Picture 1 (cartoon, helix red, strand yellow):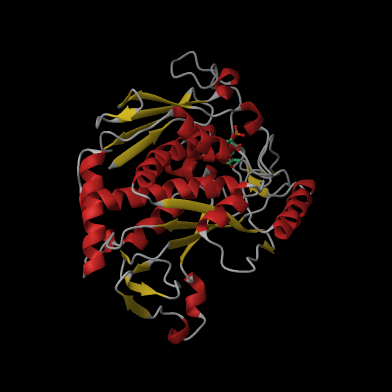
Picture 2 (cartoon, helix red, strand yellow; picture 1 turned 120 degrees about the vertical axis):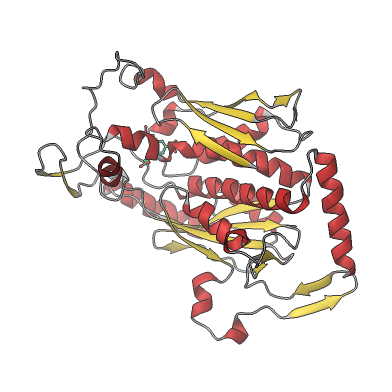
Length: 386
Ligand code: EPS
């Protein structure tokens, strides 16, 4: 299972090709579009989201609502392209002298990318580095999510922190409760009090021309034990999840289970004791490992968190240097998001779903949903007996 994305923030479309998905998987535009709409939402989003109403189209690989096993081409049209078609045109007619960018934003790919690719116009970098690309990545991940749903695997994402405000969950919540509470919040935050404080903090940041980051958490229930492997570095499930999450624009840290917290307490308060019952087979009473031991899923819910830095496109001027004149300037921008942590959470769910689907297809194989489902069911009943 693999994919590539292409497309610029102000180009005509974002595209992806997904290869290796089983045949017979039910897929609809509406199912994908629900996730695209979630990505566009969240308190703190900026002007671009007023222009776009992201919709995914399948250009290949899906027929009559079912995948065929052929490569799936996904397309998300950029409505904003209408305002950029002459500037972004691929031929000699492109108005290259307009909207030239020579003022790199600190914290963005602008300067690093311009140097690496030897570009005089930073637009050629920012068009691709923009988090706009995550729209099509969510569409890709939603195909994986559909596969997981068929196998009874459930994704739950929620926002734990924005700036200095951290959500507190009074008692342990089931995944269903968490999803319901987060789903009802404009910040995907299940703690109503924290949500109100987060909104105040976002308003304050926006008022100051500033931006805010945060932490989101993703929990995946009913992941079969045995995904990933301890035997090789690039087969460890946790390393793949961390890589996938770190590939999302603005993500600066990933934790699994207790994460960094495990470094601060003794081992007796970290490791999950092992129990056995004939109904459940082996199980843990705690899940500090976040569902992964030795790079292998252990059958407990998978719990991963990611930290997002504040978006570096700021209204508040930060010092930088013009790459044309080499003169210092203080940056000003036209539009940005004051906070995009809920959006990043939706992207996080998508990339985590993808990695789990990859690991499932690696372990179980199969070219149709029916074949895969039979193998997964067989494994699930077999491991209950070991
Ligand atoms: C985004 C679209 C972008 C930005 C944002 C994310 O559109 P534009 O650059 O046209 O406003 O709104 O990305 C950034 C702020 C960034 O720094 O990358 C989207 O679709 O999520």
